[in-house]
Length: 352
Image 1 (cartoon, rainbow, N blue to C red):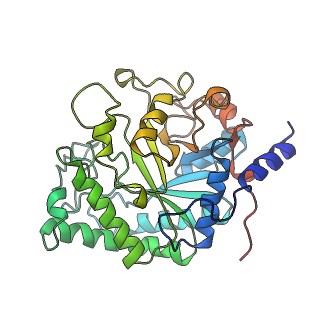
Image 2: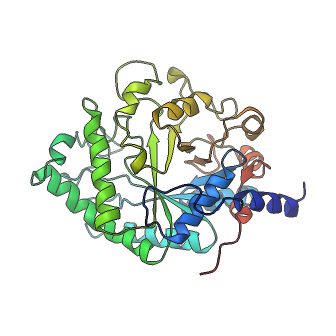
Image 3: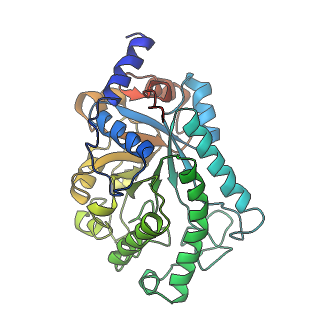
């Protein structure tokens, strides 16, 4: 198939969604975001969109195969300590600017939030040691549910300041596949309440109500993502009933998915040999009725296998650019494959 024909077929598939076919959880979702959601629904089960994490990796993918990913994942966190220090805020602003630029270039923006521990400005998103950073320890999610507690004040105050940056994107009418509390049931981030997952689910709902109803951020498409294994004890990575306890409910989630990296202990193979049907089946049970994405992965799984037998993920988002875990030859095979949609194959947007 010629490149021109491939663009035409992919564009036709993505543009085929009926108006308002899929009801977003935010009933006031802006038309630009509604259009993205409709495009995604139109492609689901027919094509998988190619993703990548970060602008540097995106540039490396382009250099390796001559194509841009359709979706870029950008972080809302400023990473540097202390939170809201002089080196933190420029990083957040830079990420917001990157998101605007990607959208203006014709791509789709996803944002995850490596939210640093709200009570520890010098901490990280991780409960345990992360790199050279000491353990940040857990966060009391039960206390966070109670207005007036130190945990609740810290949670809401930090969320409000980050929401100011999301508002820049809303004001610029940039839709965002918003993926908070990512790897929600994994246990390595502070937002995972292992003993009482319902507290984590409730704080998702608190965040939703604050950002959508109070701050009026109607550019967010809400994406729920589970971990490659749950935080409860045992080798079994399935544990559907336990995973369900973290889920805030269909009324608070537009798209669902899972993050999977090769891990033989938990039964996940490499992308070249595993399309992660088990992960697809898990999330079908945990979040019934939702379109399912491979929200993070080492590389796009074998597109020949996905096309022939599935699962047909909504999108696949490698975390790294070309390298040892994501060989350049595999980048070329996957991003140039007829089943995989790149940025140039997204249909032209409606003028407003």
